[in-house]
Image (cartoon, rainbow, N blue to C red; front, side, top):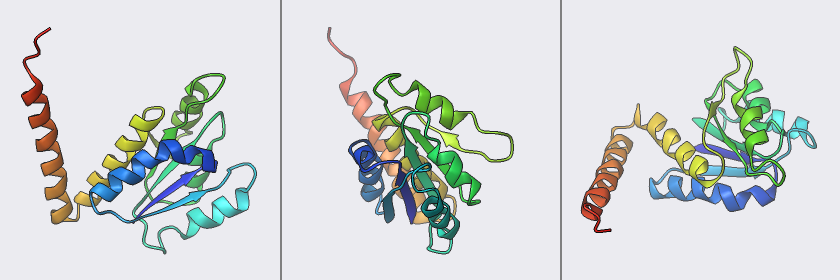
Amino acid sequence: MIGIVMGSANDWEVMKAAAKTLEEFGVAYEAQAMSAHRTPHAVAEWAHGAAKRGMKAIIAAAGGAAHLAGVVAAHTTLPVLGVPMPSKHLQGLDSLLSTVQMPKGIPVATFAIGEAGAANAALFAVALLALSDPAMAKKLEEFRRKQTEAVLKAAPLKL
């Protein structure tokens, strides 16, 4: 199981890309909306118990300078995959910098801003699961093969 946590229910529009990707691989997930700043105790409790609930990794998404991924990473040794959310004033650059600039010793793997980052974080979580699950590894190989075929079918383009 993979945890998906986001700073606000509004982030679900972007994070659905992660959920959809996990569903395509048959990976169960638990999704929660919690704020690192408005509900810090709930975030700490949720992250601290994630491994006991069967999670293998956590995808954490937040916008602005809200550093949900870092707070989650501080409360678990599970891999934390950060997805910066697009933001109104800085288009997600603030989110990206607050997620990627972790202090030494508390890592957060950081992905692209928005939907591409959400989908890629889910694919990375699938790759982590595939390390110890041969059936998942086969699904991931098939996914990659189909991506390659789709590109080759489209080429050469006639412009």
